[in-house]
Image 1 (cartoon, rainbow, N blue to C red):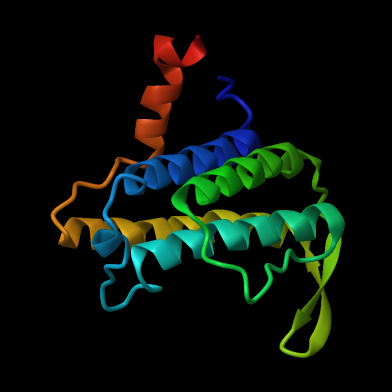
Image 2 (cartoon, rainbow, N blue to C red; image 1 turned 60 degrees about the vertical axis):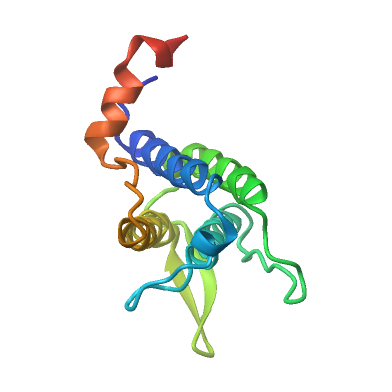
Length: 167
């Protein structure tokens, strides 16, 4: 795994962290997935769906100029679908991050006002948003007595640099 390119390393880490939290949560019971904690977005299930849906929309805005809109009447995503979405949008962000130029913008309806927003802000938001909500999920897991995965960059480096990861 190439860890020398700053942008792709950031987005590969984000993808890796999303995969790890989703993989752990795939083994939880419905009761555990529906657990929440004061001060968080919502339940584990709702927060994970929020992470992957938002990331899909950030990527769509960056790549097409339009947000992804999931139908309001669509059923909740399964954990397997969430993992699939995370992998697809994560790979897309890895691909797009180094291609976005400082003057690339996308028009966004910002509280009823159309604004040109630099795509670099969307890239920044994708990382910050996922990190914040993964931390919330990890807090709920801890409250349930479940040890959350190590998702920091050190754990990513250890895994990425291990001989098994280059097979």
